[in-house]
Each structure stands twice: as C-alpha cells, then as structure tokens.
Length: 359
Image (tube, rainbow, N blue to C red; front, side, top):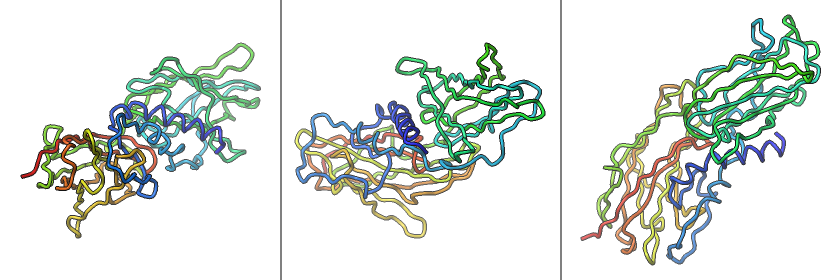
C-alpha cells in the first residue's frame, strides 16, 4: 500500500477516534502491550492537566491488519440491464472490518470519472474509508475524497478515474471496491455515478448499509461508579463481548486502563490490584503497566487475540482492589476498557470509582 494511502488512513483513524477521545479519561491506553508503553517517572506527582490525545492517536495503526491485503475473490460483475450498477456484499458493515462492494459499467466510457456520493447517519463521513482494487498493481488504493464540510459532515464524495472504451452489456467493466466505517454505528447510503467526460452521466440506484459492531456489556459495576476501600475487598465485574453482527471478527482484544490523581499524588500500578479469572486456572493477577500518558496504566486482558464468530461471545471475569499503600489524597479514580478487532478499536466504556479510607 502506498505511503499516501497509509497517511490518509491514519488521518481517518484520528478523526474517528475524536469522539471517543472526549469520553475516555486521561491515562487510557486504547491498544498495545507493556512493550509499547512508556515508563513512568519515579516521582508520584499528578499533572495539572493530563492529556493523552497525542499518544492515543499515534498508538492506533494506520491500516487494520484484518483483510488489509485481501484481493477480491471474484470479479464484482453484476447481472443487469442498466448502464451502471453499484452493489454491496451485505446489508451490514461491521466496524473495523472491510466490507465488499462493486461498480459495474455496461456502456463504453473512454475517459470518465466514477463518483460515490455518500451520506451517513450516526457518524461522520470523514470516518469512512473507501478503496478500489487495481489488478495491475495487485493492490488496494484509496479513492480521492472531498469532505462535505464542517466539523462533523454527513455527506462526502469519493472519486476515481474510469477507462472502459469496450464496455458493453455483453462485456461489462467491473471495479472491485471495499469500505469501512471507523467510528460509530449508523447507516451509510451511496449514490454511484460515472461521468463520461462528454457531458453525459450514468447513475446507479442508491444502496444503504447499516454499520454495526459487537454488543459490549458490563455487569457488577454498581450504578456506574464503584465504591472501593483502600486496603479492602475487591470489586468483581464482568465484561461480555457478543458478536451480534453477521461477520466473524478475526481477532478480539480487550485492553483495560486506570487512572487516578489527587492534589499531590497519582495512582501507580502498585496501588491497584487487578485480577482475571481464567477457566482451569482460577484468579490470576493482571500486571498493570504505566501507560504512554503518565500517570495512567493499562493491561491487555487474556486471551489477547480471539476470533469471534457471529453469535459467539467472549467473557472476561475481573475484580479490582485498591492496595493499602495507595496515596490517601487520591479519592476518585477512572478506569475502563476498549475493545478492538486487533487493530481498530470499535467500543469503549468507562468504569469510574471512588476510594474510601480503610479502617
């Protein structure tokens, strides 16, 4: 994939992550392992205004690994009588996965331009990426794009050149496409057209798909904010990720984060005790690692890359306690988790807590 493609995809990820960045507290590690985290300084002082935005954006890979080099299985030629057809492989477009589409031209166009006018509901069109397959290069390339304007556009345009001077009903010209939404659930409608460069434009019927994602739920975190006691019992909770989409997710990662600061001190990994129940092994301690945004901390829950078929679910049983050595001036904390397909985060939840003094 070209450098231009990678750069634009990276930009798309940053735009999609924008809304999530507002929700997540400082100290979040959206994706990664201990090896990718930066070491925390020895001094336990809390920054006045923690800001993890830069780290969060740079931590997200530019291109999701899932299907990133996948060539079309078959040419997307569509049966039909119209001069132009646009198709999608499924009515659902799971977030973080590529969804197949195709454009079929049945009339000669020597030097034209294909155009996809997209409109969205529930997410910004700036978070939508569309690519076409170039057989000669054996590669997927981004389409040229123009935003609909504004900070949260609901309309956008994607274009690419078309040269099919011999296209006909008997010998249609087909272009393989793929797209994905990098942000939130909603709907995406595409109006496809091809201008022949001579004043005539061919149009295809509009197609609408639903952007979906697995259902993520939490049980045991009472009333949204748990009450923990310094040196006291652990708070048990369960994270359940159920694949309610019609596509298999080739990988599933759940990353936990925590953060807490007082007037003089901040929580460090030794101040929190996170445990995970593993079938056949019982409760095991999860090593929290200082994050790229000090003084946050995080950990990748196990198993760390689990394929999830449609209808299947993954369950993570956890419990969190505050160590007796935790600084007394820290009385509130923020924690939570993000869920990704291995590269692209598609869901996150906050799990705030208060810290009461021990006996």
